[in-house]
Amino acid sequence: MEMHIHEHHNLLKRDSLHKAFLWGIALNVIFVLVEFFFGFLSDSMGLLSDAGHNLGDVASLVLALLAFRLSGINPNKRFTYGYKRSTILVSLVNSVILLVAVVFIIVESISKILNPVPVEGGTIIIVAGIGVVVNAVTALLFMRDKDKDMNVKGAYLHMAADALVSIGVVVSGIIISFTGWYIIDPVIGLAVAVIIIFSTVELLGDSLRLALDGVPRGIDPAAIEREIDSQDGVSGSHHIHIWALSTTETALTAHVVLYDISRMEEIKHILKQKLKHDGICHVTFEFEDESYVCDDKNC
Image 1 (spheres, rainbow, N blue to C red):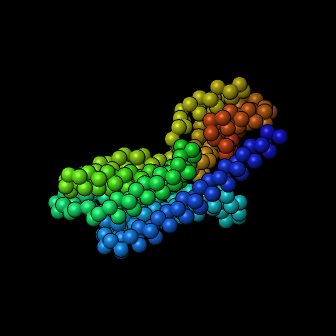
Image 2 (cartoon, one colour):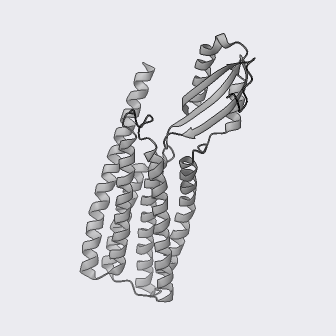
Image 3 (cartoon, one colour):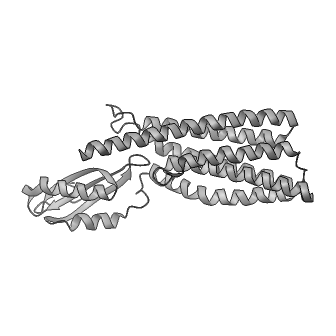
């Protein structure tokens, strides 16, 4: 019964995340079209370039949705783990896209500092205000699950970053309208870029670690080894490998030495339950009798 409830909860979670991605894509596609329209109408390069940037965010959301859907496909003979690893690859791509967007913001901001230009009227402020709402609402769709999945976190950071950029445009536009300080626009742009860099570097580091089969954040290999070795009936362990199957699933393989090999099934069950509580759900043990010497040559 407990397993049925757990599986039902996972299905509900996947369904809600799927809807979040679809809503996020739909909202941002509509906003990109609105921004392009008013950009042409007001002859605003600022709006047109921001629309292009937001189109890149739509592409990132589509990629994240694709990886999310692929992760739910069952394994087959050629892909024995399924397509779960696509979530890691997309997370890596999205973090790179975020950094490219930051470079674009920095270059544009420095260009405006060197060559200040006036804000192009109330239309830009209104459209940027709409952008704040759209991006903030989209970010909220992913906020609850952002710390559980790197792809969801990437989508959240994309939308939160865009909301900050749009807020910067609105604030700078209002200040410039009253004071004529055109330089405030690129200064706010640079401040936003710094905030995005700090949040994106962590995502990029996590994505690279998982892509290279590193131990996922939050798991201490030494603590896992101590937990295995402290189990009654276990003499020791070695050849422990911990890596990510996806942005949400972790695997482990290990050689476990037993005092009494006849207790293998009992100890296997206990250890798997313990590791499940540590967030490691895919576990493979190779059990060895204490009399067997396992070195690099005969392992």
